Image 1 (tube, rainbow, N blue to C red):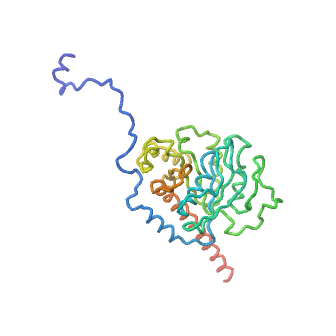
Image 2: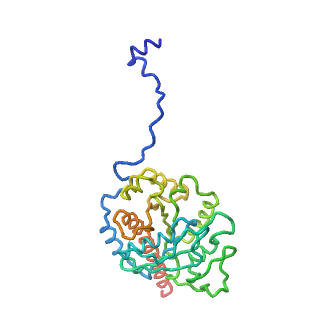
Image 3: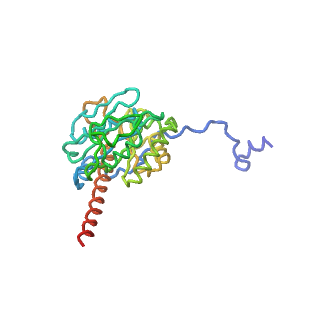
Length: 304
């Protein structure tokens, strides 16, 4: 019968191939995230139109060495239109940031505050105490408070604010995560800590966004050309993994390349950062607006 298959392949079908399957696609021809109408000018215009009441505050947190402080510097650089390095960053073992710091933006970001905190570590008793995150959300912790890995802030501390106002609270939380760790190298302990913190954020009804940094180290095509960030299948898979792992919609996961070595800004790096900023700042402004609406309704009830 084998000789018949050779003569009549249409009847018997082609013999099974021993060739290995083709490698997974590295890059798409068109961006996997729609960017049709998104340009630097349109994103900037959208941010400029935001109603910036009470100087919205954005808390930046995440695992150590993920690039939290570098992301803050990148945002402030894009906002200022030039490279700036206000938030101290480095490659220390453990968290480089030890104190609670607030940074005010300029120009485009002049009405926004970015808060930097100690990093999250997978080891118990290391990194920021998760309870301190809840105090930060509520506005109880003042600037320059030095985090204690072993315990949360003491209510008798001079850095503890007993009666926080709306402007003292956090209006959006940004989790900064190394995109490379989405290839299954992020520890379960890290995931568990982040999920616990996320649950506290949900209870406070504070919006959250995930930033995936170091996409140029994740994908060689992106390293060659930052314009490929939304065409890279490796980056897309990292976004999909983060969305599933942390139970957040994909539209709230933003891949970026931080400004670390560069001394001049580039459109290719600016656009992903601006896209992320558009949602982060919009979320923060929406939160403040909702809080004002609730406060106004409460005042009306008291008046009546």
